[in-house]
Image (cartoon, rainbow, N blue to C red; front, side, top):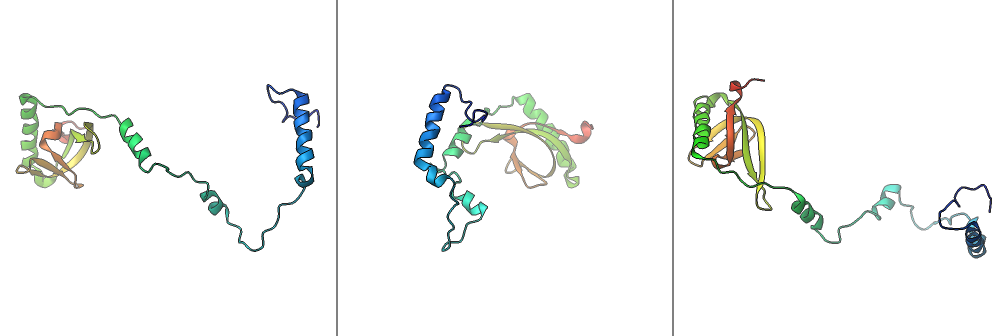
Length: 163
């Protein structure tokens, strides 16, 4: 063993122990250490991608990762508006309804329920309103999303607060 080689600088092992282990390795496998890798002639050698694919992790418990992610996701409770807040939201909806043919742009905060657990998140978006459906109590946005009136926390016309 060369004294200047750096691989042997392992803490907790003395040089004489390391030398003994190296000698034992050479005694056991010295005859094959210098040999070339055998050539396989009856099988096609897989490319790197195929060889790597066999070592990809697999999900022993299908859906377990999704369940962990779902549990770790934070949710909030829905906020119920008081009568004064409902009247303010309703007043803006009336103004929006008057200009619905122009698809007015609004800023709104609404509650989006979590499909997998109780609670949800509050989203704040700027969007254009295509239709206000009073019968079903919902707003249809230009991109197709529907927001129920009861999920609205606040809404304001973008023209009221230009930035």
